[in-house]
Length: 216
Length: 188
Image (cartoon, rainbow over all chains, first blue to last red; front, side, top):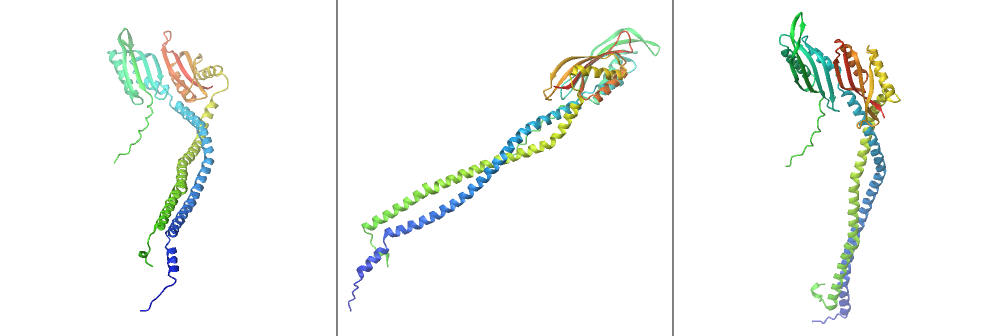
């Protein structure tokens, strides 16, 4: 067997050791990881720049629109006052209590056997008008009390067609001391006073409650 | 070349440890000094964008709402202008009793006495005040009076009758004594 001598074995071994140097391998590995990290970092930086641009855009939009919104708010308050005043004015004019139709209804309800001698009335309230009337008078006929009662019910029925919550009641109803000539015949009389109360317009409807969604 | 041929000596182990320390250092520096703050800044800016969005939307909504009101305002302004045109300049004491007296005179009722009773600012109508007047008609026929009231209510939208008393006079059963409280809207 021939003897083979490798006289370069020391050089080769040193070369091999240099290639397998753990520090060198570690440096390569760390370098590769650092390169990946750097790439990801620059990717994030680019992303950050886009986000900054978006923010700057939004900021600029807000700075443009904010003064307009502040001015609009101030203008809204002015306009709201005007619009509310206009609405209140219309409501006030259209929501008035009209006495003439009420007087007409009252006159039409009075029969020939009765005579009104006094009427007092007042209207209370801003949106919903509550009216109170008192009528005094004299009724005559074979049964003057019934005439007065018929007048009371007639007024209640007539007013109920137009107004709400109509109530009528006698404050007084007494036999009169004097007689009157009715169709040429002397008839006994009764004096009466009737209180009438009614609502001339409806109360404003309350705001509808907010809907609560059903929980599943 | 076989790995098995390689033997870790003390120097190699030291180099491996050094390499590992460098890796740990790199990871630490990267996440804590570079990527961490960057991510935090990103999150902060994103949050600012998210915070700005509703503010921008609210500002746009405000502008839109005002534009809607701006469109509705001329009608109200017209109403108020019409009402203002109905109210004469000067003190109401100077013109209202005369105006009411002339009105009833035209209706054939000569003796109308109008006196101011109370005056108060109308809280629902800024710029206006409400004056209550006492109107006395000593001798009137009921039917012409009722017709006059209908006409007054139609012609004078700023006038509202608050109370009314109609009483038959003892001297003349055909004549009535009327006492009214009339509210009138005037400028402040």
